[in-house]
Amino acid sequence: MNSFTGQHILSVNQFDREAVEKVFSVADNMTPYAARHKRTTVLEGAILGNLFFEPSTRTRVSFGTAFNLLGGEVRETTGMSNSALAKGESLYDTARVLSGYSDVIAMRHPDIGSVAEFAQGSRVPVINGGDGANEHPTQALLDLYTIAKERQSFGQPIDGLHIAMIGDLKFGRTVHSLATMLSLFSNIKFTLVSPKDLGMPSKVCDVITSAGHELVISDNFEGLSEADICYQTRIQEERFESQEMANQYRGKFRLNQKIYTQHFKSQTVIMHPLPRDSRAEANELDNDLNIHPNLAIFRQTDNGVLVRMALFALILGVAHKVQDFDRAVHWYTNKHQN
Ligand code: CP
Figure 1: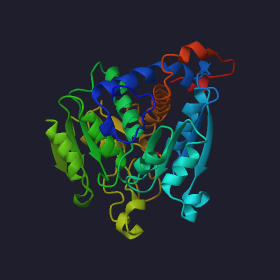
Figure 2: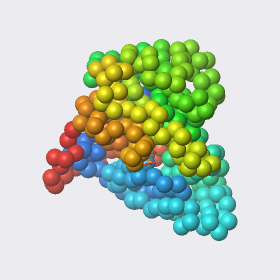
Figure 3: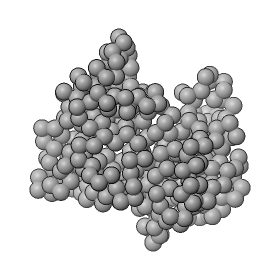
Figure 4: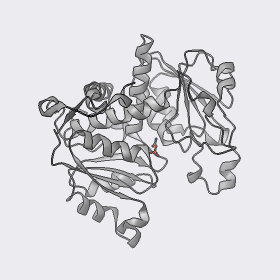
């Protein structure tokens, strides 16, 4: 991608390594605004259409927060039943209408390819906030940004990383997007741990192997002692035909303090795109790891704001003007300091 200005962000396949590093560099510059040390009004007057036709907490709210932190305003619709899609309106018509009200649109939809279809009708840039079991490109960017930061704290680059991806790799769109984006880097070892029926799609495995990376496929926690990142995922029960079918995988790859200590080295960083399923029987990422210093899940969510601010600034062509429109803030900000 040569320039972000005016572009849709629909797939990680649009990115080369240079484009990823450009987003990270702009995201770094957003730190004082996300930490509320300063505010900027560089997007004053701009409107984000935030359209979430599938449940979301952090993607929807962090897109809105990121836009507000740049001085723009947010108009939202949430849930299919609250929109005219429920009356049979096409994605094309919805896109024509809502792009007349917005300068940029973020969208999540349960169907694979739906956000790309919507973008064809849109008169403004569209960002994919997750299309069914397919992709979640901004999650991949924030995950990779988090990995870069965690690695920096050990004085290491992304290159040479060993990542273990664990859980529902079939329906988990975050791992599809992250594995593809990580494949832009050098000498990555992927260990993919899942039940046999929930393995990584072959098209993603092909991306990994054709880029020359090492790929190990497993259905247990053996051989993970040298993993730098443990990326845990939720069983995507909403993508199964029945609750019973999803339930058979519950708790299979439980990670808690004891299992973590038994199978991973002391520096292994624990990540999860969230939400984690904290109901009884799910047990995918236990609360007894909540205060572990290697648990990066809330650093991921904080980084989501930086990365989404960077994307908005790049897409709307103001990344170099953010500081020209900033000033100090006067309220209490201690809670935003890590
Ligand atoms: N990680 C993620 O997509 O979270 P939400 O479903 O809450 O947006």
